[in-house]
Structures are given as C-alpha cells and as structure tokens.
Length: 215
Ligand code: ADP
Ligand code: AMP
Image 1 (tube, rainbow, N blue to C red):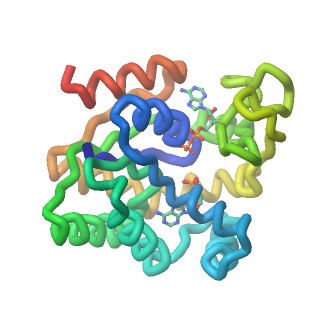
Image 2: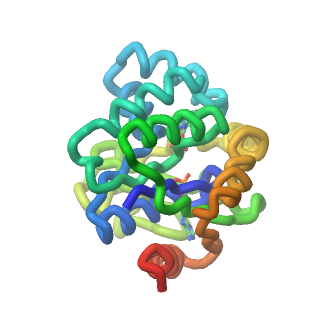
C-alpha cells in the first residue's frame, strides 16, 4: 500500500504512523525525522535543513525531493510505504507523481488528519521525543510512565527546538499557505481519506486502519 499522511503540525501524523506501519508492514518515511537525523550527524544536508527548520520554514523543494526519490528506490519500498510530512508543496506532489510514474507505481490513499488550529499549538508544545529511539509522548495526552524517561528504552525525553509556541504558530501558517492546497489536489484525484484527528489517539488509529481496509 502506497500512502501519504497529510495534516498540520501536531495533528498526530507521527503518532498514527506507528500504528499504520505495524498494521500494513510498510516502511515509515518521515522527511522531518530524516532531516533531524542529518542534523544529529552534522551532515551538510543537516546543516542546510536546520537553518529553515529552526525558523519554522520549509526546507527548499530541491533538497527534499531528491532525498525522497532516493529513499523510494530502496528495496523495502517495493510493496509500499507510508510518507509522513511529504509532500508539503504542490511542486513536491508533482515530483512524487512523476517519480512513481517512472516506477510504474501509484498512490493508493492520502490520509488527511483534521484537527482544529486551536488544539495544534498545545499538542506540539507539549510534545516530547525520546532522544535515543524517537518515540513520541505528550506531557498531558500521552504521558510516559516516569516523567522525562522513555517507556520503551529508558532514554531521556526532549522537546524539539521547533516546538516553541512562536515557531509552531509560524509552522501552522506555513502549512496553511503551502501545504493545505494539497487537500484539494488529492481530493481531485479521488484518493483522499479524511480522518477526525481530535479523538483520542487509539480511536484515531482504529478509524484510519478501518478506512484503509475499506470498512
Ligand atoms: P505530527 O507528526 O502531525 O506533527 P505528532 O504525532 O508528533 O504530530 O503529535 C503531536 C503531539 O500530539 C504529540 O505529543 C502526540 O503525543 C500528541 N497527540 C497525537 N495524537 C493525539 C490525539 N489524538 N489526541 C491527543 N494528543 C495527541
Ligand atoms: P515534521 O517533523 O514533519 O514536523 O517537520 C519538521 C520540519 O522539517 C518542518 O517544519 C520543515 O522545516 C522540515 N520538513 C519536513 N518535511 C518537509 C518537506 N516535505 N518539505 C519541506 N520541509 C520539510
């Protein structure tokens, strides 16, 4: 199954990705995670991406598109993939379509997680990520058993540098201007699946899996 997760910052894309990839045995490809890994490793790509990410802006299309195209050619994507946070612009969506066409592939679904703007800042500012395994928590809505410690690997939980109120607000505006037009783009292609992302995490996951299974 070839799928995209669409939705504003803090909608729950990364959280639901875990359920979807386990259910359908496909790789989770998050461009945000790839950029953060590059920043951690101090690569040239990481240094360039960081300049934009810290400001809440999108990394330029030319850097992002090549990265995803290379990733989709890897063996583990042969039976499908879940793209999380890509595409984020019409240019990226067109480039994705072209790349898939050249591989004789097409998208099955675009899962659009809908959450009202007033909930997004609270979600993103309260987000904590394990510095070792990347597991996501929330200080109120999805707490770890022990404060500040990952349930899975006992790693330290950190706040993302771009999860301040100011940068999240900027990212939501960037989403509205540059990414939201993709809802119409994929609706016209007839592959959008709209999901109410305001329900509790487990209910959102169940609804996504049911819709992807055609129930
Ligand atoms: P995204 O990848 O779309 O930016 P995340 O999956 O990282 O969003 O979720 C943002 C924050 O909101 C995280 O701290 C997560 O634990 C929390 N969260 C995700 N889904 C829900 C939900 N349905 N209800 C409440 N909190 C949620
Ligand atoms: P995310 O982890 O999806 O919240 O992304 C974090 C940040 O990474 C974004 O605010 C952007 O700066 C950058 N980023 C991630 N994916 C993309 C993309 N597809 N296009 C441009 N920038 C991206």
